[in-house]
Image 1: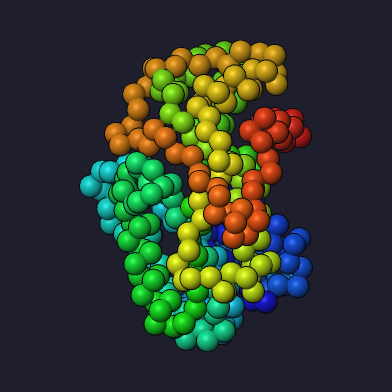
Image 2 (image 1 turned 135 degrees about the horizontal axis):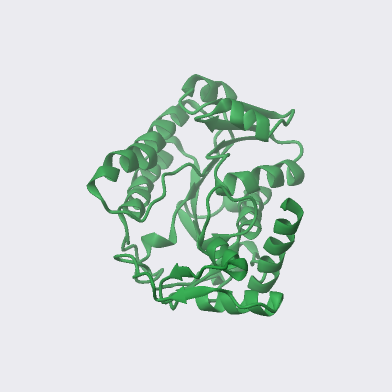
Length: 302
């Protein structure tokens, strides 16, 4: 099995690649990268090839059977100066990839990655919260066109509030966890938005499960989407309380010191019934266990 991965050195990619190697040891992997040497250093796998992000000839020669598309520019900013880089990263690059894949006759499944920010008012319909989310939604139209043109299936994975694992940047949970040892109070919003905190290992497990159950996936209607989370809503304040119970220390947070961002999603909890019905899949890591894992990893790294 030949699998092409974009965004392999990003947050999800850094956690997914080792899982792919472990669960699919016979698979041949190719990563598309802005920094090939960095990728080679992180993943010195014998069955893995690392090429430049726009090396379309190498993609055609590899002739992937499955594509996992993780690469994206992510931002909640709606400023004018981010329009061009957003369009370049999230639409133009993806469409160039899709156009290249026209010549890859072995391709059977394209796994796309969406965002819960595409569903500002809930998962029943797409209403984009940010320009970033709008580019993710727009890319789906191109993907739908090319998949019909070329005859492969695609699915879209919609992750919710991801935390844990190997991080590339600090995220909400990281700041809350840091506040547990902070002398100075950490400034945050009121912390009342209801989010579905999902450990990155569960998200990666979902991607791998799609591949392991490829024969089932290929029988589905084209363009299925899956909202990947725990199905349980918690506020940032709930996260802080859980950390306090685990450490027996108060989190030093100034709640309400920062305003909510314009167009922030105030309620985002994954509907998980479809995951159970179609893949018999559910997230395994509870918030408490996921936070404990983060704390243990920090002790090892320190």
